[in-house]
Amino acid sequence: MVKDTTHSILEISTIHGKSSVTGSKIFRPLKIFALEKNKACHLVFSNYGGGFVEGDSIDLTIDCKADTVSAFSSQANTRIYRSEHGKTCKQTITGTVGENALVVFMGDPVVPHQKSIFEQHLFWKLEKNAVLLVIDWFEAGRILNGERFAFDSFFTELKIESNGVPIVWDRFKMDPSQNNMNSPGAFLDHSSYINIFLAGDENLTRVKSIETQLRFLAAQYFHEHIENKSESLIRIGSAVKVNEQVFMIRCSAKNNDLLQPFVKALAEHMSDKELLGFNPFEGRN
Image (cartoon, rainbow, N blue to C red; front, side, top):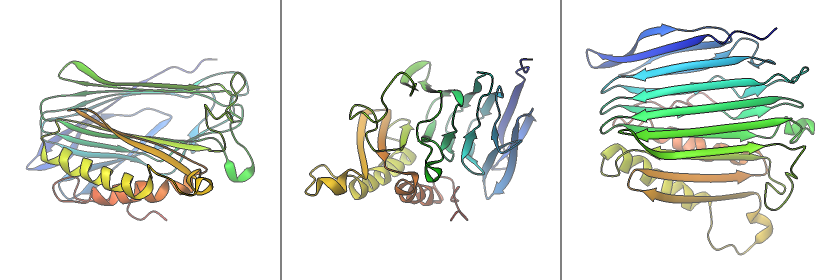
């Protein structure tokens, strides 16, 4: 039997200078915990069963009203479990970032297990002077158990619009049975990747602050001129100013541990009082 797709809703508004959840309707398999963090709102995603079980479907609409400050993270890696009957696990998140609002979407990696099928769609709309930071993070299975690119299919899509105009449309599909993931044109010996998108007017103070930190971290972790090629292969990345509204980082690595320091340093920067005012990864190992 195909599971019904039930539409979940989150609304975040500013009340007396503080961002709070003012409306929610959440259905299985999704769980969301709301944490109070000074003037910002911190929402933590989780799942019943610790991940996506065959056929699970999440359809979530997020409305972050004007002047709100919100962070979305996860309890742990998002695991996609084995599909015994060829059913797809699917996640669709449609979000609005209101005027002068800030949203930081910073979850842990998606980890597709052997024989799993996963499809993800992230759609965000930005209003005037809104800022959005999105992290899209992936690891190719239970690497420590020797499982690597053993899933059946993985698809992810991110689309961002600003004032009704698309400024990001990023799509990526992996089908290991049809493609050689160890090819130099794919992952070679890497098993993890991370994409970071910063969207918002480049003249905004928040955008300048986050972009400066991203450039600093890119200079620290990525190298344009490599002397020792064997060392360079553990992590490869690039930082690109796409246009006046988008700054982007792409990075792949041999394993997730090599990407953790980059993300943790970025999360720590979010504790600036002009941004979130707290670290969404605080307390992590």
